[in-house]
Image 1: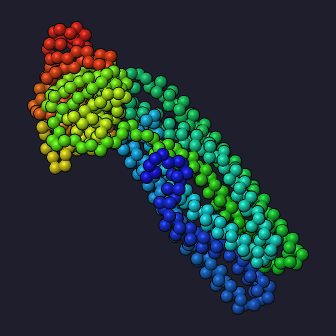
Image 2: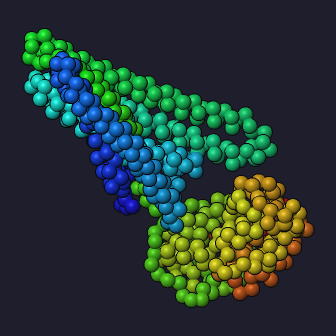
Length: 565
């Protein structure tokens, strides 16, 4: 949907256009409702002239039946139209949320660049709801316009001056309403932007609450959120004041216009140009007109806020992908040979590395940024600025990101667990039909974690696995990565919160679990590095040393300080 950088206007059109059938049906019913409501004062005027003024019983009963039929029709149309209208708004919002979700989950990435997760959530909820509401606003606008047209026709039949007053007065009134809505649109955009940022900061702080408490940084975190929240509140108050001014100004304009209609009608009645019944009908129509005008006021406000939200959604949908999507297929089977030639990205500077299939290789990076950038490139979350990374001779940039990640799985140090059972977490990335997670649990020492839980591996974990300790979460996350059994597995510091005995058990089991599979251990753990075939040391973003762990400990002072400190 909306590929190639949509604009806010395109987002609005797409949201409304996707509900065309519902909007059309609801609009027809809404027009019928407004038409019946506009005819009510006309029928009352007829009753006064033909029955009340003459004392005739027959016409009175006949027109009362007509009036009852009008009320039945308008109430029925209103109920059905309201249900369909609300449904169209919800379906439009839901469609936008699906589109945003697809963009955020696009394997090529890019939507989250420069945006906190909470901000994306706010856009997918608040902004999507506001844009979806424009589908309902279209129905209201068409219904109100139908009411105005029917009222104008009725007034033309009663009196040509009154009808012309409506037809000539409404367009400038609507134009003034559009001008008045512009400040509301601008302030609504700022309000939503500040609210999204506040949501993002709140989510960020809640996710790191345990760390903040451990550091004693609660006061700084509260101060940061207070500033962000106050900015959001100030923007919301400015938008509310703008909305109040907008609604008040529109109400004053429409009230003045309706008063003029009533005065002109009274003057015509005093001159005898219209009857008493026609005067009652004209006054009733003037009072009725307040409803369509208020509805158009509401529509103006909804479109002003909808346009602001649509612009924010369009920015996310137009975000360029972080990586390109290739079309080359990997040879089958994937042997797991990885080559890096002159890779430059972030802290990496001309990195050269050749890893044989089935190797268990350790990577020690003195600069954490270099380790992180290596993970990003291997996982195709980013493409190198220069150089190439190959898997079995195929550059990663020529592969679809999803296929590349199925072949090279990067297990980040801060990987989150999900709400669900421990076993479901471990099985999350397993191939369809592969249900035995026991070997992976054992290799990661996560079977000990399961045995310590009330219901074993079927115990349901809380959000992000917070019901487990840090070391237990690491073991479950490592088991999940091992259970996926990819041709190439890249693991970053999987045992930093694990005791030394358990770490030694994990180191011994890793090689046994992945024979013939390429495995990168990006770590400074001597227990893990001791079991590798080769250790590569990165310094200043390039390979500074390589060799067996035991040899490097004996011969390289810098390496010894890095892993044994």
